[in-house]
Length: 327
Image (cartoon, rainbow, N blue to C red; front, side, top):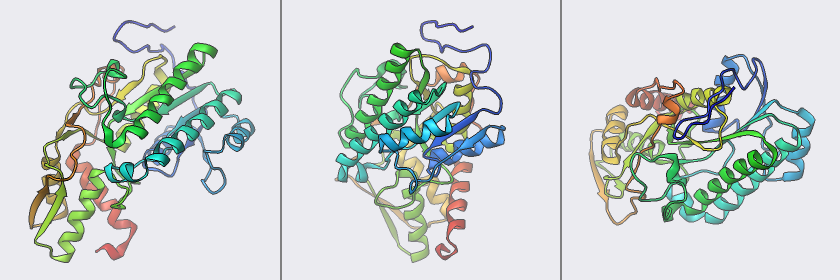
């Protein structure tokens, strides 16, 4: 039995995902997908994956054929084209079109295959640039988006609407969740496409190795951001799959934030860079603040376990282990 009270999640009294269920994780090699695979495997679920060279999720026909062949009990849609301000500004066409194609292929294909549960993962950038802080799920579509990532955000908003439409028209037990800024093992450290935290790790690390006297960072350093370790995200995803069934998306975050300047100081300390930090105020800051209201999620019993500094140190160590030549 479920309840649907205003402002509260609709929680199932019994697990909505049976023990040992077969779960297809779309995007299993990415930051989010790999963490979800680790968590599901540890909890005894049977995880299904398919490499990109064998299945392009933008191809609706082939994706549908695959899902009908394997018939998973559940799908976690973690596949997406992602990146920071530079990548979003450089490739807006790919950010909207690739994500729309992936979402259409996987969600429609899962429904055609009879998949009972599906979790669509969006992003906190779906909310208006000047949304109230912390941002409640009800802020969706109440104002203008941040221009630097608008194509990506619109694609994710379309995914939420697609999920709601399948629920409304077919009664599908499909849900969506909006993670805050994520980091951890599996992150991308390419400076052209990475998000802020891995970019900072790489910039400070390379500056330390090269003996640079200064690292100059984009913007003013004043925007505030919330960061959640990807393993905490994976725990939240499983909790939602097992216990949540509602039309409204659920924010996933830690409930606290810090300035980019404070984040840079943390990363500088972890990496051991001893030089100066400068700020190029001619570069864009992005959204002034982006802190999620996570009361829906916490009411289900979720609490993050990995402190930010510990998570940064672990992510830095993981990145160094990938290539001994980094020093």
